[in-house]
Length: 379
Ligand SMILES: NC(=O)c1ccc[n+]([C@@H]2O[C@H](COP(=O)([O-])OP(=O)(O)OC[C@H]3O[C@@H](n4cnc5c(N)ncnc54)[C@H](OP(=O)(O)O)[C@@H]3O)[C@@H](O)[C@H]2O)c1
Image (cartoon, rainbow, N blue to C red):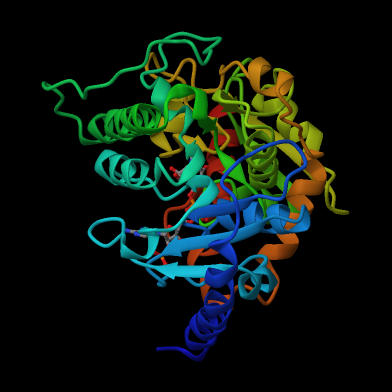
């Protein structure tokens, strides 16, 4: 076991001993301005550390439930202020038995059976279940203006051969059925479902949106894929985290698309908006020819994704209901700058950075060759 993991678990265990005494006297009723006891199923990867920070800053107490494997690499200072419960959603929920919290936030739900089990176990001991879902529930995105009330697919079609398509359906179907399990156990009036689009920000582990903080800082000729009208949607992870805690505080049950930016945006508008985040000279090279992009193996640079009939609405999700209920957005340039600063901080190793920045075949690595080929094609 590494030193950092040993220290992380030891500090968590010391805190646990104190907090479990305290939590037995906390009531399990949620109301405005009340300090809440919050259980996060998860907590140590990307969304969780930001929920924890915001919740602690607002005076709430937090317990997290994980296998104790993932070492957080953002907001590391908050982890000796939370109770760390160890178990496994697959087969060991003992640490959650005979305990009560005001609010449960389920971030780590990756199987319907996991959410069913925790919702069933906790329904009499917690007031609110907050399920972290995804806009993936709308797959296939064959229409636009996707609202929370839209019927979603609950079963993966049987005759699919394409593995990618199976995965895309599978994720959305898992999330949609998990939402239902939470609502069945807690009742719709006590369940909050949040459906984020692509999240980015400090702590990002997905290596998707990281392209932009890394790339924009270098300047020069920047490849921007997509047709002029191609829309994009994305959201700072902290905006999602904070929105979720505020919804829980106010117990505003319902389903919310946690999607930014506040108004419609195209890929070209996005890049123009953020291109001078860093003090470097840069020029945008827009490549709008899908056939050429396919030839070059460029199918997405999140938040842009090549449009097809199944993806038409992926960045056309309606966020009005969430905004009406308190979703706010950080300034995108500041988000990109802060994500960049986190990426080059001591929270990450050079090896980790190289793994992404030098990844063979990635657009980041191939970009200048693609631009050269594009110029030849256009000449
Ligand atoms: N990233 C995006 O753009 C995006 C977009 C839409 C929706 N979402 C959803 O947002 C959620 C955010 O996830 P997150 O990873 O950032 O959450 P998180 O709360 O920061 O971390 C999740 C934690 O769950 C723990 N975990 C994993 N498997 C477990 C198991 N079998 N039993 C107990 N704990 C387990 C892991 O810790 P251990 O390894 O120590 O167990 C991990 O650190 C996910 O539900 C995802 O589907 C993400």
